[in-house]
Image (cartoon, rainbow, N blue to C red):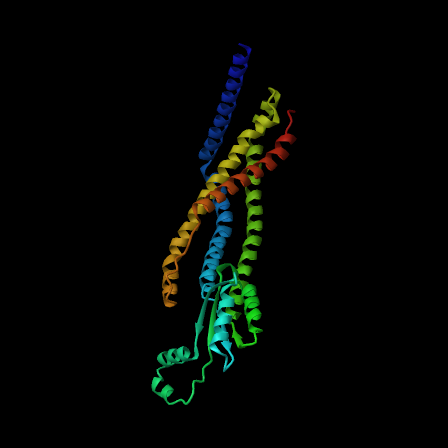
Amino acid sequence: MRRKRHSGGMSRQLSLFLYHHLQEAKTAIAGIWFAPLTSLMTIAVIAISLAVPSVFYVILKNAESVSQQWQSGTQITLYLKKGTAEAQALALVDNIKQDPEVERVRYISPDEALQEFASLSGFSDAMRSLSENPLPAVIEITPDSHFRTPQATRALSTRYATDAVIEQAKLDLQWLERLQGIINLIRHSVQGMAVLLIFGLVLTIANTLRLNIFSRRAEIEVMKLVGATNRFIYRPYLYLGLWYGLMGGMLAWWLCEVLILWSEHQVTILAALYDSHFRLMGLSAVEGGALLLASMGLGILAAWFSVYRHISEIEPG
């Protein structure tokens, strides 16, 4: 019997706890509804503060996608010395194939290279008049997808360039390094901008709640006179910060998607000029969810700092 009573008491306490929190959440959102102009301005500032770094994150995400596509075309070309026996060349090809950093290897014999050059250049008749084939054998190496960064590709090229039968190793990495440098610059800019704007977001929510607290100072004094604890008084403001954060995050996500849709047509036209089918990627469901969670967390954090400081200073006269 005691156990049943204890269990029933715990259940009742939990129900009352959830009921009070639900009522506080409703009261907080009602406060937003009854002060629409102030609330809309606060939500708009929060949304812009979150939308700007989110848009730059999307730009970074798409730039990295383009970089990965271009890195897929990264190739190392090894030119063999004239007179290298085909058996030596094929032995080197077999050795390269065993390398875990290599995805694909293609051997082009001097005859195949001459035929390919003749067909591409249009000088097939002139090629027939040559007394000997001037082109060397070539080995084309495509690095594995995990080793297509400039540093890894250069190390791979240097490793095989020292082989005795290799005359020259060709690797054009300058454009890839420049692209990587631009992406790193965007990444650092996004991080710095996000810190500044999030700081502004916290200040905005904290200032809005500070004004709300001061406008209800007499009510808070009465609540303290009848025995209300600071924790009880904090609760509606914490929910208010949560609602501000949630609505600001949702608006920021929407603004980000609108900007993507607005830019998509021009990006498609630009991609077509490079024979690409690239399409802009927006925030995924997981990334959007993370944005909402972050905005709600920041809202609660800003509200807690504001109410902890100002409500504790209010005491009945």
